[in-house]
Image (cartoon, rainbow, N blue to C red):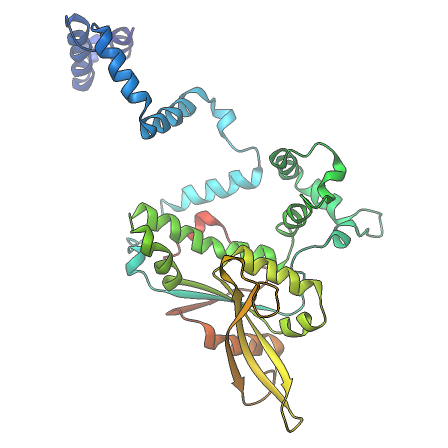
Length: 341
């Protein structure tokens, strides 16, 4: 059968040298009196050996998937996924300089100013109705219909009310928040840089024991959340949501302005940098968040416009050779992060 395929595709007279070589090899195998094709005990031994090799099984499964799946089944259904894939593939044909290795690339820090915008939509936010009686969640479900169906299938949700259960509540809140102008969306997009560097380090066979330290050295992300301290004192849900993001992304850092009264009764201002504790430790206040640095300032850092002053006070916590300022309503994609170095 294989010889017939080679002959029919090569059309005999126009057969290439490679096709002739393959045809000769198949003829040799078919006429051999011993070997894999004829010695059943040898063949069984080799097949058993292959079946025990995990890498071979992984390759065979992948090959079976590539050969058995039809093209329309392999293509993503989402129009947004198709758009992103098409843009990424087309961009690879641009003239680009050779990318340095991860260990040789320039380090950079991303800074995002945040004041009091939405961090993660709450259940109340999602159930709030507009003047037409349409809730925020229903609007997003309609706008991202295929994404919502994928979400329900992935979590194996069978009843509509299950999305508000403790098991799925945060998943539902995050699904909606990642499709709106929230801090959670921006943080996820910027942390794709870290995920991209982790993949590139693995492809470059960087020693796993030093890969994470290398990634921290090359990339850092600071959210300048100016009023986080006030939110924390007022037990604002947004502070809890920021804490959730810090725990979700251990290398994320948040800088805020802390105000306290000195012995003379005057206000004292500090630039504070925080992160999530390691291994689930409770931290100073039991929230799993700890202070890294607290730098006293000569006075109130907000003298002019709030946004640039918010960024300025966080600059002392940046470590990269380059600093990229990203607004809170911006997003990022993993495939584009691969090209950032």
